[in-house]
Length: 357
Image (cartoon, rainbow, N blue to C red; front, top):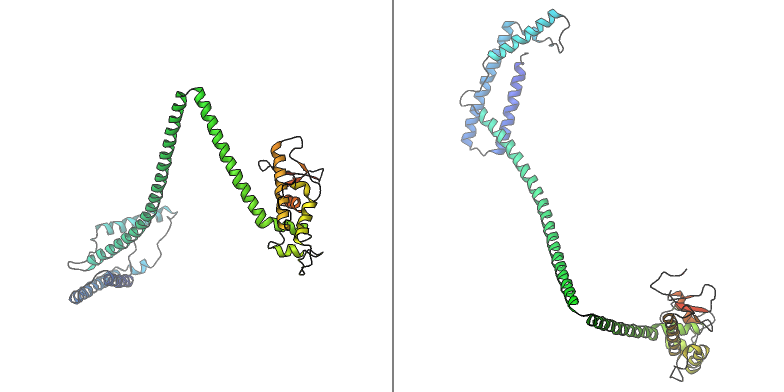
């Protein structure tokens, strides 16, 4: 075993003492008197170690081992048996010397044990702080998962409760049905169908009224404008009575002059043009353009609806007497569709089925 140079030992001891001093300043709050005492002890320990290094260096010089120690030790066993034997004897001698020699320990009262304990304690404190931070992070993650699982449990309990209530009602209804006669069950079914029929009739009336309101308030004026040569339905949303009375130019723009046909003439002209749709239901003898267009659209929708619900041989188609703005609008809006082979035939689209291409 090769001895360590005295200068290297001294340098290591100085570095260790400096590190121990820095650690002690960071972790411990020592009074000034205690610091002075520790510095005195450090000086004593340093002096004793220097003396020991000097003694070992003197012993090495006296034994004449410094020159031999400068030669590098072999790293692999020699192939020569004699040299190999010498290596083994040298290793054994070094091992025996180390095992029989007393270890170098600090003297009594030395601050080195306290410094070592302080260093170990500081390392343990740092590790514990890191462990606390990691545990806090894990705890927050676990709490988040716990809260999420609690919410899921509450949802599952609520769903289970509602399902149990639903099952109990179904069982009660089943028991009640089993106790009733066939006549009573049939009467209840008839009554339920009648109630549903009345409900659907009311809903149909409500939707029809909403449709008529939309036609009267918005659609009729745009249909009348297109019938009178104006823009296509949807191109101009703010069509008013004045525009309809003044008429439209050949380019479809509203006229500024008031030399257009009178209200009676324009409205009556629309009714005469599409009188087959009205069937004498128009009560006003002198309707405006907007009123006449509204009557035309409503009549066309009613005829299409009757044809669709009638399920006759026509397949829900009606025959148009001519091209109308109302019919063109229904086709563009995907509300109605023309016959693929006859453009004069029109029907409502059955929204319960796929659109016909």
